[in-house]
Amino acid sequence: MDGFSAEYVELGSADPYAFKNRGDRHYLALHDIALTDGEMTVDGMPTLRVRDLRDTITFVPKGCGIDGWSEPEPRLNSFIAMYFDPEAIREDLGTRYAERDPTPFAYSRDPQLRATLKKLGALVRAPEVDKLHAESVCLLASLEVFGVMADKQGRLSDRQVKMVTDFVEGHLHEAIGLGELAGVAGLSRFHFSRAFKATTGENPHVFVQRQRIARAVNLLTHSDLSIEAIAASVGYRGAPQFRRAFHGVMGSSPLKYRLRH
Image (cartoon, rainbow, N blue to C red; front, side, top):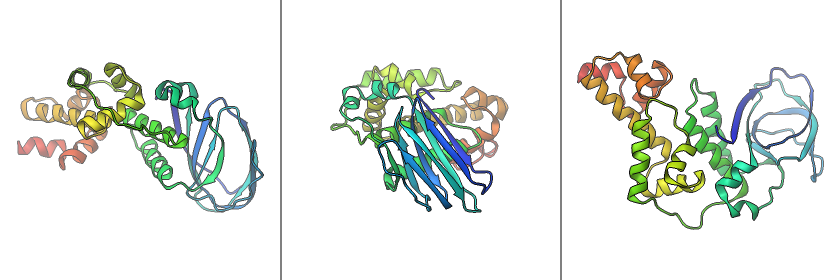
């Protein structure tokens, strides 16, 4: 994902461990961790000794130091972490980014950001990652960290909508990134996402998936291509991913749909 990366991590044991880092990217994490003991220090903040970290969020900006140690409780402890390049976010937000210097926070309980990161965690843990969907969620999470939202929702012109639609239809067999769609419209990813939703009523990743399924429906009805071949032709990395997406939209498996039509 352009400017972003994410990972889901399960702690392998209840053994105590130490950590120390000063990253070259912003770090954002949603914890599902309970501790028997431990402490954490982030530059510019007092030492924290919190044991119940479940549903808490930590943000550490680029260049900010973090260190500490933890002794987990004997349970399934995990976290979803997102890393993002501040320069990539600067390009998306323009002058708005410069208005807010990012400051660290630890063990926050922000419901909106938590919901976004849980959605990201589900995407990262899925058998196949939807790049466009994941990139959109990462961008949303980064915007929520800075508390930056547009004052006005612009709209795309008819020409921009047609250019984006034509691009998607011509690249359904490929992975499509949010940056590519924004580039076609001549906007940043942030402004494109909001303008596209304001104009069409749906998010870019929903639109792209709907176009993929519409093409698949046409092929199922009017061709003898195998399910595997159709999956590849509309941009899915395998038949299982295609079947899940198709069922989510059509309420039926591709094979059952073909037999009925």
